[in-house]
Image 1 (cartoon, one colour):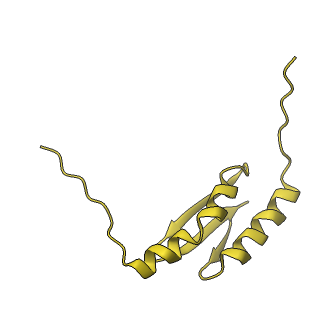
Image 2 (image 1 turned 90 degrees about the vertical axis):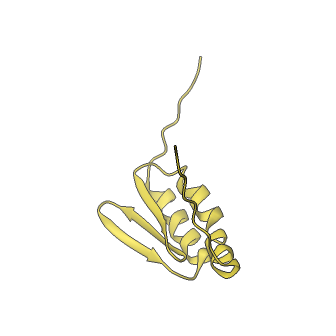
Length: 80
């Protein structure tokens, strides 16, 4: 028999976590960056061994991500 456990968040916590969705989507496209969404709604971004924690401002997190994207080279693949 298998049991599955799913977190149940309050509406307030769920909204706060959802506010970081766009930032997390951007992070998926940046190479060499690790990130996690911590409870209740904190986005931790690790780049070059340095951690940055964003607790209440998804806008601030997105600004930081865009600054990272400027300095991280993007690999371009050309198909012939």
